[in-house]
Length: 151
Image 1 (tube, rainbow, N blue to C red):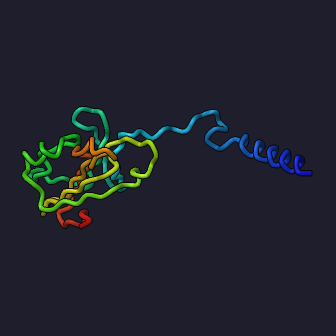
Image 2: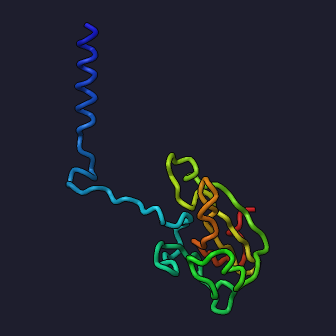
Image 3: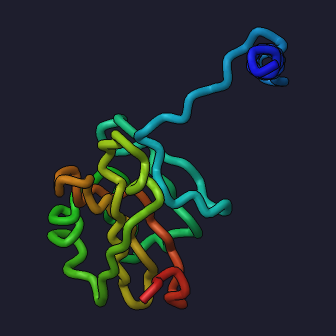
C-alpha cells in the first residue's frame, strides 16, 4: 500500500512539473533581467546610458538647465560629483532586497541617497556584501521640494 501512495505521488508531481507555462508554451524563453539595471525604478523617469555605456540609470523629473544637476551624468563616481557640485546637504544609506539573494555580488546591495536642497536627490550604489562597488551614480531625481529624500 505504501509503495502505491509513493508511486501515485511521484506521477502527480511529474505531471505538474511538465505542464507548459504561458511563457514557454510559445517556445520563447523569458527575458533575463540584467544585473546592471538601476535599482530605483520609480515609474515616471527616463532611462539613460551611463557615461561609459556599461549600464542604464534613471533621471526622474526635469533637471533645470542651470541647476547643479545639469553638470552631472549617470555613471559618475561620488567623488567626481562632489568635485563638480560640492558635498550634499544630507546622506542616507540603506540595504536593498538584493542583500538577501544568495550568491548575488552586484554593487547595489546597498544604496546611498544624497540630498541637495533646492535640487533633489542623487542615488549611488552603496556596494556589495564585501564593501566593493560603491559610489556610482545610478539615478538623478530632480525634486526641488525634497520629497525624494528618505531621512
